[in-house]
Picture 1: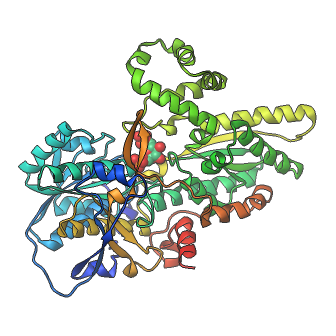
Picture 2 (picture 1 turned 90 degrees about the horizontal axis):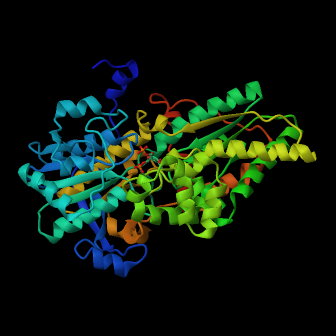
Length: 551
Ligand code: FBP
């Protein structure tokens, strides 16, 4: 395989491990845990895995021998930088337990387990992928593992390959399913442990025990580099307003982190829009207001960061999406038979008056995008909704109205961008390379400790790597009940941007100044080699959160 100079140099990078994972590992068990919400319901649904203690690994003294084990691994959902290093850490971890242990990768996500598509991951294969971006070592997929038939089908191949532990690398939904699978295998005495790893560039799989999901660091750095470049272009030509939508599904963590890194003129935070019960009109007025104020100083240019999930957080649109979700979950087949040209009026006829009126008022393209197929977890595919165009167009219309009344005097030309896929397979930053390798190694430790229904957890990651704290958290501890596909289901609670949290407060304290002044920061590309203060910095979000925690 041909390689770039950076790929060759990067292959030699040795990810740093926490001190406690380097030698003999001892397991320290905490007290029994409870789910974050709805404990009774969750306990009823997970009688075998509920309430287990938090696990911390410490330095041990007595070397234990471990039998050779066969382990399976699955990459689930959207790509995130560092997935290959989780696999490398897992591989090295199980070989460290016993050199005769074997790792099998299931191909193209959870579907590979059900369809018995797998490959053995040998040392040669794993070595090819160390410190590289992407999930191409075995591929990923969004199939949802949710029913008994799939679990039983999966068990057939696990038994055939003598696999006694399965590691699922995924986001909140995939880890929820990992826990359902762990519970089922425990209930039937299948003899297969299931361990999860926190992946997603979205950054919304985090809580007290999971500081961040892997990939968030690298993806945000890639987006911030590009936004920084756009800001320099913007300040050089001084003629465009750039509307930049950023991936991240529901939560605005990516937009917030990029804002902290680049200091744009405007950044919308969906969670704040919802908290303030703002309408689409309010958001438009806010952006147009800043455009008008900058125009007074002759600054007819600027940058607007828009989180991908914004549309779902505008309360009226959220109600519309919720009714559409329930309706389409029940009548999808009927809807698909309606001619494309009649779909809009069909939907308007079926919705309640309030939602039908709002749906009818949306531009044709956005209305259509709201009825596109949900993902297998029942989520609207927000990456397909062109919010950046919607806002650019509507702000333009508002400014035209204001021009008529003399409220605005200026020139408004726009460029629209969507950054998402660009960052998901980037070569992992040193932070993600180390974090992911440690997560994989930790997963091996949890397997050795006989745990199931756990997520690998590596904390204290703003400290030097040697001081990171590795262990495991029972997945049920992170769960609550939510409405999905029209039914209440146990799911890992999504972490949205906390408006009382220090990262948002820091942004809110500065945004008025960033709006009017041109205070852009240009982060530049990720650096893999060089001084630690350039190469090893975690995200601003994590640094600010941890600084507040340790105050
Ligand atoms: P995960 O939650 O599976 O990690 O996916 C992250 C994400 O990149 C979202 O930010 C985005 O909305 C979605 O995937 C896009 O999905 P797809 O890759 O199927 O187009």
